[in-house]
Length: 444
Image 1: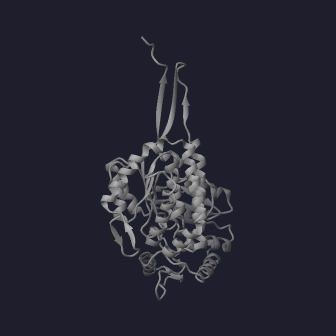
Image 2: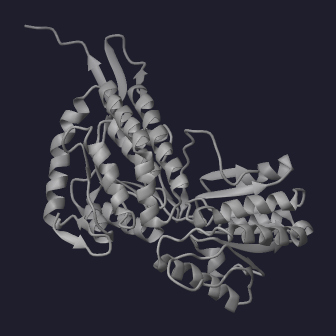
Image 3: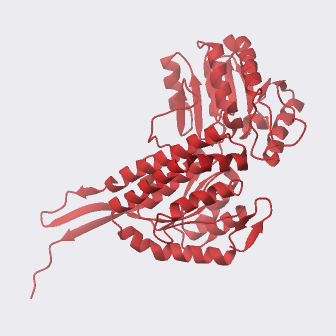
């Protein structure tokens, strides 16, 4: 560790250190791969137990760094622990296949670790997301170099300690720094997998670097998730769902509601109800991670208002220090506005009133992102039409959040590529070898 980030006083990993870290990861990988799968799983269980023991500490550190309330951060830590336990159970039974060949031979397909995995994780849910990527990579026999976000460096460093104290030396290593360190890792030769959760522009730069090195890339990047509201639902309930989706964690969730399409038959009741919800959220506002993000959010809101949108609630930067931005409701939004075309990542609910369900579905589908979408409807026909048509990895019907454990989706378009969760992530972290094994030839 050579340089110091003055904003956080966190040591930043220098170029020479990165070379050593990657060399050590490569050297440690064969022995870790030879460790029995049950042994690898046992270490993950140990880390999961440690996360539960230190959940309050991690949540308080995250709150100090990002403003995310400790009670919510603690839920993220516990979710991460649950994910590690899940992969500890799935890893030893990860799939293999036998093939029907000749009587004299045995044929089978076996998954093997890819080698060295670089994991680049974000600040908004740093423990839960890291545990998914690290858990799947480690239990399948890979070594991992993890760079947490520079916006939550102390949370990432403490998580790294809890992992590193329980794994053999160099099996999992944590490095620190901003995008320059991430770029250096993405461009380094000898990396087998780069897994990135974060901004779309960064993901595309990583994909370009990996095209030169040959590394496999897993990307979960930005989303512009639509909420489609049908004419037959209770507008007050729909407003509660919309507010939760748009304002929870100040809109800083990968699958936050980013744009709302509401049927004109209930719009006159839905919009006031949504405004009431926004005012309730503003009684206890949550800060954005930093003023830089707040400036980005407000720029999109201001541009929309300049082009004719109306800010019925919020839309004004609060006076005084901090990075809080109010829950904001925008109406009269037009399709070309950035607030509808780009990920806002803040507590903003832009509303489009549509003439019918088909029009709303068409506009919801017309987007370059493809992470997730939500549909509120009492019509099974409309629900079927929507989940089949929406070009996204995850569709939620009648609930903006939720889902059974183990669901694995592939984002589309600008939102990324590859499985990021569930048992299928184990497939992404391994490569398959076919073996044809015949009896030994006759001896002389």
